[in-house]
Image (tube, rainbow over all chains, first blue to last red; front, side, top):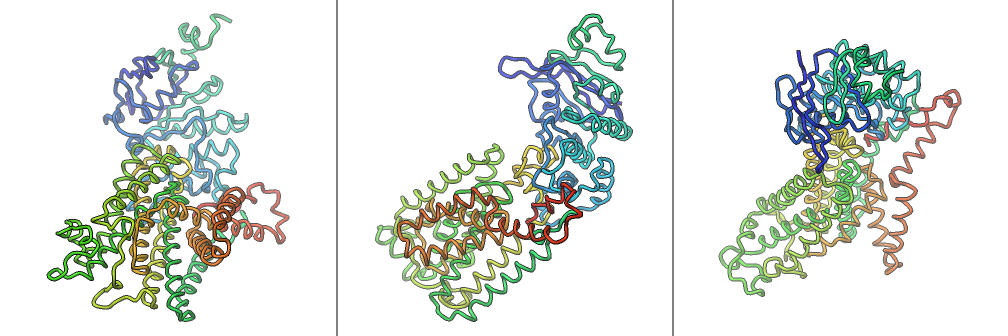
Length: 246
Length: 373
């Protein structure tokens, strides 16, 4: 069944149409890769889903709940977690504190004033820290982490939110080969219990994680299916893979 | 596995805070000179103001150059309350300066100040509510950083001008000097006596403990997170504008309390309390003492104001230049202020003896979490 339904999304900046009638259904417990050439509107789509930008028209429905008009924090509370393209963590806080902020079951400021450590936090911290391999690094200031560790920390923070859907924008950008290997194992583990949308350029990486691949072109839906089908689709070859025949 | 810096140890922090409280509480036992005691109490007020700046600027990242709004409005409220204590509803209902400005009736907004309790309550609530409204407007529109600082400064000047211009109601540039000390429950509080000192001291201890607990709560952690990256906090599901408004209003409430107590000590208020240099001075105290340390900010206020009182007489006109130079040096070389210097020293001490075995761990140099104090 569809967790997230995007219907006929449009977005223009000034007179430029960036998203042009894009629709997408995301199925529960799948990893959907969103691919497309530069400027296809992948990150803008992420922005529209998470409320950072408001669509010109169209609707976004999360589990039957229309979230199109909500603000960022309301959408996040309803269960959409996002990892940014440029890793965004709290560099002055320790890894543990980063996870603690991300554990956002209670968002009311007044109740949080009277609370030091929320219930259920330790168990969740243990689970996420183990999964992201940051268990030994909990007391380290996040600004001192390596690039790969920072990426995992941010994915871990999104997991702390217990989101219905995780949106990952280029999760392996800037990672070393071995870090990418680890991330592939990690994401394949994750998709057994979570629904994910991953924006990615690297087709080698996509091949190893994707259940479904959605191709965007010029702000619109171009094709969807298994990677093997997509790669043989002539329209996709033309816009994305570039060369007509090898 | 990481080297423990004593600076970050919560028990050690509380011990230092406790020691500080004991020292300030014992001062009246050693100081019998009323004038000096009054001056120390005034430093306590400056300490509260620096602490309020530390909360919103240091922890919340909201650079507030207009803290004089809360301080000044509350000071006016307190002065109005004390003024009305000297008036009589039947024989003498109108303060003398209003008569001089040919007012025939007590203005409506002075009426609630007949009641001492009501007057003090208004002095605290009105500025806090203003902070809630102004903060909501600013933070919902995502005004932040230097833009917020400029807005707060502009708002401060607007209030100062307003008070200056409403001569018949506020006595303009002359300000309000209530003829007699504050009287609570039938007792006069002598501004030069130990009671006044202990009220201020108790207030300072209460707000410091409250602020310290606040910074250690989940709320405090979210505040520190949004200082670094508000966007990230928003996408984790927190209403950032609401959190910012909360910390801004709490900081305003503390400044308002300071304003009330200040008038209790000085028996005077004028638009000078809403002067921009005074509000910027508060930021300098917190910046030099250490904006990320509540106690550091308080001690920064003591240091600078003490320096101004004792050295200022000798340097006179050059004092501001000395202060400015000191501020530039601190900002350039010690972004966390003098408290940050202590943090570095303790960190170096913790690493020094017999730690060679750990030197291969790159993260050993980072020490414990930087935030939390």
